[in-house]
Amino acid sequence: MRLGQLLWRRADPAKARHRAGVRVLLPAALPLAVLGIWWLALLRQWVRPYQLPAPGMVLSAFQEMLARGELQQHLAATSSRTVAGYLLGAVPAVVIGIGAGLSQSVRAFVDPTIQGVRAVPSLAWVPLFLLWLGIGERSRVLLIALGAFLPVYLNALAGVEGVDRRLVEVGRAYGLSGAAITTRIVLPASLPAILTGLRAGLSLAWMFVVAAELIAASNGLGFLLVDGQATMRPDRVLASIVAFALLGRISDAALGAIERRALRWRDSLGTAEPPDRTHPSPLSAEGGVTP
Amino acid sequence: MSGAAVSVQTLAVTLSGRPILHEISFAATPGEVLAIIGSSGTGKSTLLRTLAGLVSPERGGVDVRNGDERARIAVVFQEPRLLPWLRVAENVAFVMQGPRPARRQRAQAALAAVRLEGCARIWPRQLSGGMAQRTALARALVTSPHLLLLDEPFASVDALTRMELQDHVVELWHQHRFTVVLVTHDIDEALYLADRVLVLGGHPARVQAELDVSMPRPRSRTDPRLLALREPLLHALATPRAVSASGG
Image 1 (cartoon, each protein chain N blue to C red):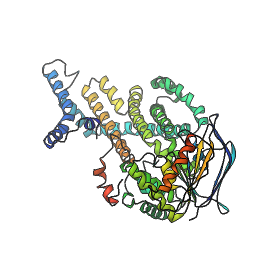
Image 2 (image 1 turned 30 degrees about the horizontal axis):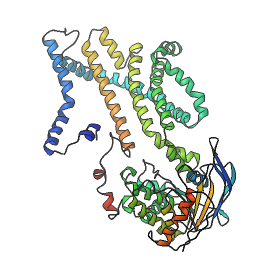
Image 3 (image 1 turned 180 degrees about the horizontal axis):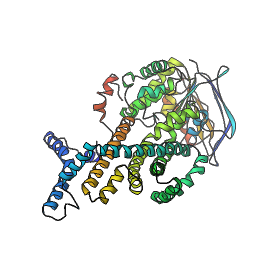
Image 4 (image 1 turned 135 degrees about the horizontal axis):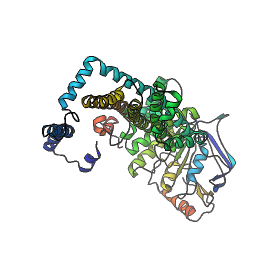
């Protein structure tokens, strides 16, 4: 249920049908308007086709690259280095973030340094990575890892720090060991924040793979962007941008689905279902006992 | 199941440099229901948390024994404190050890004992306040405790649900005969449930008064003998001094 529904909900079936139609059409309205303006701009010659090709040309560039297997190759290169960099950044970030949240000593040891690194814009490290590791896969993956690390670490730390102490007390009152309290209370309780961090880290990983491929790469979608610019092919540039958008959207939707599945217990505006829909009647199930 | 013997000796607790409890001594016999009352902020909950092992005493000690063994202790807090990511039955099974099928079976039995057998598969957020607190009670029962610590467990539910839950505790006590230490600010609740009432007061808190409620159960809330005991208790709360009275 959305906040707006909660605030201005009205029980009117006719309006509900009307709203359903609007819900389907509304998301398509803005892209269609952009396409319309795009056509109009070309038709009226506000822009030249070498600056902005027609949507049909972008589509055919896309199809042509697909047919030649070119696009698949670049997609594979970009995806594999994004996944590698993301895992290299996000996995240690979760572990270190949780460690820093659990232990004051770990936090005192790592947090000031990480906050220091955070103050530096990540792209500022590029020259250093290139100097140390050369123009190659390692420097690209490392840059992506750095980009993904920070949001995941910060969210994991905030998640563990924000765990309701009263729940931890339940574990202590019932004699659970420290390890059991960590794995069975602290980690599940901080999962929402960790998943938020993982999603933020993923979108930064996509951002950094573009940067890495723009600077130094001979394949990948970022390379395709630079190549399209160098060869005056805006249709290929736009086709690469569309491919990036698809990759980003698909990967985020996959993480989002995992998040919804893992957090289906939550009673928040984004995930909540009214009790009457999720469970026919918890009250009748217990034989009409006054709740 | 049998009750634990509780012995508290010259207990002193200091929190953040502030003395909260001073020279507290009392004992509870196996199967006794002991209520501790006092006004807000007296340190009742701190005393209960010390019994639960959640707060370390500065001096003195707490001994909870079941015969020669250490007793099993269960706590029901003021809020249900259910883990929101576990379904109701999993919340109950959470505090148990052993193989999963056995835990599930015992959790089901405990839920049935609090009349929530139909709610095993739903999420805590789908429970009403009273149902959530009953789940917390089931979670406490499933460990077969020798000592049940109740920290104002019915303070956050409406009056009708509170009475129902109180009757429920009496019913469960009849079945299991565990020792109960109940912290409450509700005089009527203390008199209805307890064999003995301790009045905590002062800063730092001491045991100011003690009242015997030696009346058989089930009790009636409108029993004149029970109502007559309100007077000395109110008096003890208002002007702390040693009171020793008994009903029945």
